[in-house]
Image (cartoon, helix red, strand yellow):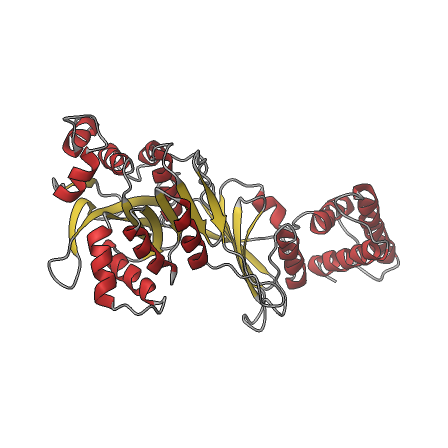
Length: 425
């Protein structure tokens, strides 16, 4: 019997005794510990009789088994580390991505059955379940500090999960400047645009920093603006003085009670919002943003795309998924005439000293009323690539300039904002 087999044998024995006595790990801590120590002692007794390999450190084994039974087992150490961004579970194998961008494997042995128990424990504090009826799940776990996405057979050939940790509380545009995600000029420009009911789309690949940027933009909005934030799994956590956060609800076991993202956006439209926030546009909820435009609302949304122009087409395609009796040309025209900016973010997984993964804004593009069936885009800030400087092109579209100028001190315009924020070379 190797170390992995010994660990699993002791863990199973402890669990059987704990379940037989109906002990609760949250209230019967001392009794649970006693059962674990008994299971270790029993294993050692058998080992002395020649029926197993003796443990080199029984106390360490007891602590490992106790973490598995009452905490999150082998994942406990990873969850306690601030440098771990994502944890991946594939059957019995656990790996993780740290802030340097490196994918590393967990050296502590685990089993698929143990990993499944850990995920179930995480989900126990939510309304989501992972079972044969619901073989895929997404949920906020660990007190709202992480997002769990998991699947089990028959959807996956084995348990497959990703635990993504995020910290987007109290982030500001100045914080992003300090991280070299954007320049003081670009930050000042975005801050000025957020003073009005602007319509902004943030695009980028997964993990590029879209949600963090959205949180920073919301923190820059006037406290008197009414903000209604709709997300599938809540990630943005900026304090809102006027407004609230909303989260979708999955159908109950009898298939009723589902509240979709589209339902949420339609709902908040009736609550007199100054700005509607949609965390990750994927489908029909995009069509409701066209209604928001007609109601005079601003909006802020994120979506997956490889560039700012691609983001515009992705937004149109998502709106068409609503199945309403409108043509692609009509939807494109609405967004062309209403959308102010597309901000594209990207990331570089290569290590740069101790800085880890680098996430930067690579493009801030203004959208103007189309001169044809497509979109008319005018880059305002551009970056040749990750690590290159984010440069102002000198462009300031008149429509955007005039709207923002009304919210600035008299005689002060966007160009003045940029000049004032420019750091001397």
